[in-house]
Amino acid sequence: MGLRAALRRALLAAAGLAALAAEPAAADWIEYHEFSGRMSVDGRWYPQSAAYPDQRSHAGGFSIAPKLYLEDEGGRSVTLEGFYRLDGGDSHRTHADLREAYLLLFGEIGADEWELRLGVDRVFWGVAESRHLVDIINQTDLVEHPNEEAKLGQPMAHVTLSGDWGAAEVFALPYHRLRTYPGRRGRLRTMLIVDSDQATYESGAEEWHLDFAARYSHSIGPLDFGVSVFDGTSREPTLLLGLDRDVTPILIPHYEQIRQFGLDAQMTAGAWLLKLEAIRRTGARNAALPLSMEEDYTAFVAGGEYTFYSVFDSGIDLGLLGEWNRDGRRERATNVFQNDLFLGARLAFNDVESTDLIVGMLHDADFGTRSFNAEFNRRLSDEWSLHLEAVVFSNVDRMDLAYSTRHDSFVELNLTYNF
Image (cartoon, rainbow, N blue to C red; front, side):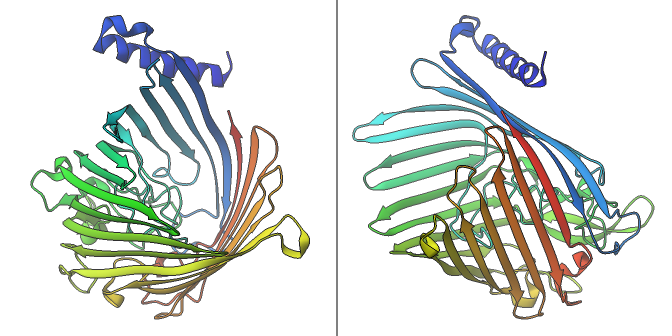
């Protein structure tokens, strides 16, 4: 039996057992099913010598993300998606996660429609290119990539009501996920190791604190916008100095109770896309030394994208991007986006292989640090695709939070089989 068939049968068996446990007569409820997913082999090479002991100059890995979709005759569905990565360079990067496992129900209330997703899911908010500032529902899977775009699955009850007036969403989030961090041998880590086993919470309920979020979104002519609120355990921890069992200094994640108000908006004006993400957050600590303190702050990322269609009478589209990231805490910010300018370009070849090339530069206007990124994607066949990426850190200032990764420029090659 092939790997794809084995995975498919295993997920179908799990879904069938769950249905039988809930209701024995439900064994035949599946009207339609679809099994898909991807398997990838990848490698990273770090040209510069490591900044810390035991770090390697290269690492190879393997990941798999199978997905099963089940639907009954009424359109109600169950979605299951798992993820597993095996990494040869960092044991902390070897990990598994349940990305999605939810029941979808829907119906109508008068002229409006309602939808309920119950289980584990991933939700994305935001419009910007350089950073997704308002995106707060899911925890970041930081060992996957330093760009913070990979997310862990989040247990939730997610209700949506939509109509001509827009869409209103409400989230109940009963469990908090810890952020993943590289281990001692991993690259792209902090100078001191982050020990999530000693993580602490401001709430007495710790990871079981019930968080809430809501969002309203609408489109009015060329303007698409969303306003959101989150109240609960922060997804971004404050890293506090501590000791491990060997009395070695480490960093301990501390998760505060915060409240965040967010706005994301995008306006289309011909070939222009104008973008804004802004937040107001209360309850979070800053990165002031020697002891961080609670500080309310405002942050935003604003910019736009202009597209030249069919440049030089070819089928290629060229998009030019520019954004400004600003955090009101500036040098006390807990991230590297305290005052950064982003410039980039996107080439979409619009061919049958879906070829695209994205290049960008992030310049820190306070510290002078620069990071360069280039991504190339191409579909090799109906099943196989190629991803090539290079990330370069340059002129990293000692006062910048990015200083610990100053030697961690890398080239990554990823070959993916989609099934």
